[in-house]
Image (tube, rainbow, N blue to C red; front, side, top):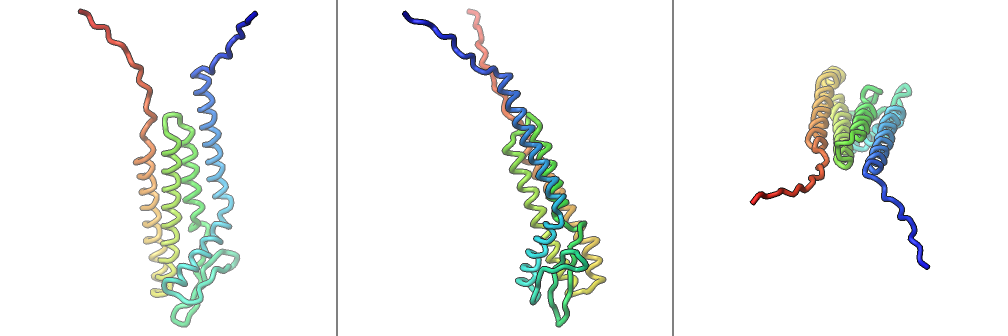
Length: 198
């Protein structure tokens, strides 16, 4: 004697969409938390920036460049023209503020259902990476200006040149988001049968 067991119904499209939406929101929240973490650990980020900056300065134009602390602030100490100088990396110059903000922005975008997660991740990585690179260029450039033109030249380069460079970087990062992210998910087109009247 044979029996027929009831088949387990397949999950509906609504349930699948809800599950996908929940996953996107959780992923977005995780990325936002990562961006906030960048802001919280900005001091450690400045210590790392000082190490990388010291290596670049020593490689490019100075001698005996070392990461150090100046009044508790991470700094790059280097020698030029028989003089030792210290370039302090304050919280306003920390890359954590820029990269963390971009990561938070990317996490918020990930929660939007019409945007592709992969595109948002790529744009976030490119934007944050660009700002990290530009900030290292700024640190090395300011160290060179300080060594060649003294404090007056440094103040001018720091207030105008550095600010312009990072502002331009933010604009380019925004352009990266606008160029990559806004393409929406393709909607499934239902094939409609056309009735022909003969």
